[in-house]
Image (cartoon, rainbow, N blue to C red; front, side, top):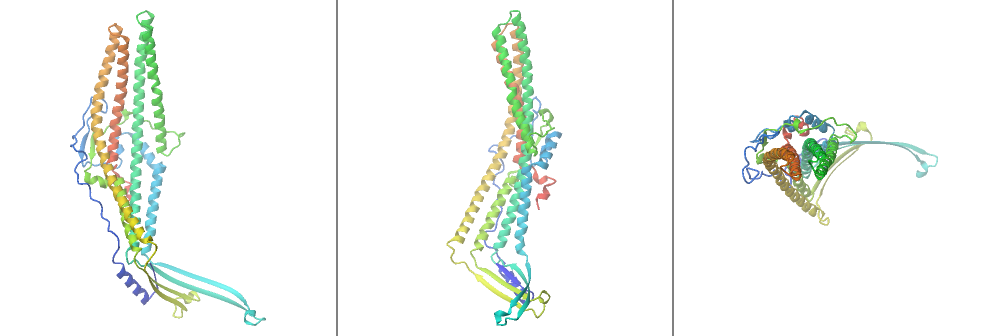
Length: 493
C-alpha cells in the first residue's frame, strides 16, 4: 500500500489516517520456546569427578556446574602452537569469511526492508525542444519551434494498516539473527575442527613413536636370535618368524604416516592454505595439558548458549512472521496518493503551480484462484516445519552434551585400564625375553608377548588422545563460550 502526500492539509490528514490504521499487526506474535523441563543430561547423575591413572594425561577431571567457559576455550590446553594455528584459521578460513559475508548481506537486507517505514521523496524534471511544420495547420510557409519544460514532486509513504510490512521487517530481522548464529556456529565448528585435527596429529605422532619403540625392541630380539642361531642355540624358524614380525611392525608405520600427512593437509585447508604451503606448527601429546576442571552448563542455559539452537529459533521466528505477511496480503489494500507538477522547476512551489492531483483507492482481493489462501496455508505449514526442526535441534544438542560427558567418564576409566594393561604387557614381555633366553619358554610365547605389548602400547596412546578429543567435544557441545568472546560484539549488531 503506497501513500503519496503533499505538504499542507492533505499531508496531515493522510498521516492521521495512517496512525489510525497501523495500530495492529495480523499474524501470531512470536514467543520464544521454553527450555525443556529437565535438570540434567543423563538418567543417572554423573560423578563429580572422573577416574585417574598413574600415567601422562591420567589426572582426574572435575565437572563444575555453571563454571565460566571462555570464548577462547582452546587456550585451556595451554599449547602455544595450538593457540597460533586456531588464530590463523579464524583469520583466513574461507568458510568463516563466507559466513561473515552472509551476515552482512542479511543485515543489509534488514536495513533495506526498514526503509518502508520512512517517506520516499521523488523528483522528476524534463525538457523537450522541437520544431513543428505549419503544413499541419494549413500554413505551408510557417514553422514553429517549441520548448516544453516540466517538473514534478511526489512524497510517498507505505500505509500498513494490517502490519504486513512490519511482519516482513520482523522476518528480515529474524533472518539476520539466523545468519548471526550461523556465523557463531561456523566459528565453533572451525575452532573445534582445528583442535580435533591437532589432537589427531598428536595421537598419530604418538602412535608412530610407540611403533618405532616396538621396532627397536623387536630388532634387539631378532639380533639375539641370530646370535643364538649362529651357535646352534635357536632354530631358523624362530629367526624367520621374528623377522616376519619385525617386518609386519615396520609396515604399520606407513598407514600411520599416511594418516598424519592427510591430517596435516586438512589443517592447511582449515587455515585457508594450499597443500603445497608450509605449516610450521607440530603437535604432540606431551605439548598439550589436560584441563582438570570442566564446565557443565545447566540445561536451561544450554538453549541460550548453543548457536545451532539459537539459529533454529531465529528460523522459527521468521516463519511465524511470514504467516502475518501472508494474512495481510488477503486484506484490503488502501492507497492514498498526491502529485504536484509545474512547467518549470522554479514555479513548482509557488501558488501558480499548474498541475496537481489527489487520489484514494481501496482494493480487496476477491478471487485469485486460491493463491493467497494457499500461500497462507503454506506459511503455516512452514512454521510447523521450523517448529519440528527446532525441537530436533534441541534434542540433538542435549544428546551431544550427554555423549561428551559419558565419553569423558569412560575415557578416564579406559585410560586407567589401558595403563594397567600396558604396564602388565611390558612386564610380561621382559619376563618372556629372560625365560626364552634360558630356554624356559618357546619362541611362540615370546612372540605372543611382543604382540600383546605392541597392541597395549598403541591402545594407551589412543586412550590418552581420546581424553583431549572428548574434552574439546564437551566444549563444543556446550556452545564454545561465544558469548564471552571479545570480538563477538561485532556480530551482535
